[in-house]
Length: 120
Image (tube, rainbow, N blue to C red):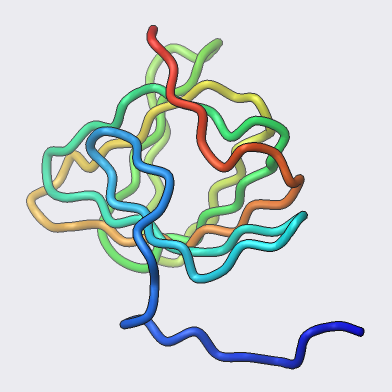
């Protein structure tokens, strides 16, 4: 039987799968779904990482989320109201090029390791 509908309050989010330069917080994790948020401070640049077999979707709530990824010269910027899709196994890093914090909501599906930090 499926679990009942539940609400996870913002104050109840738990620190999760760290990558240098990023503060991720998990709302919940199920065998095939991970949900949470990421806050990136002004000027911060994350380490390179990927999300194993997980497809990731980010919705930018505030600020700017800049993403760089292997196989692409340059970067892509997303702002409030924008969605970002990061395919499974895509090595990437995120940053915040502005003077204001950024906040994005994350949903991952696939059931792999939440975050794999890599040297590049």
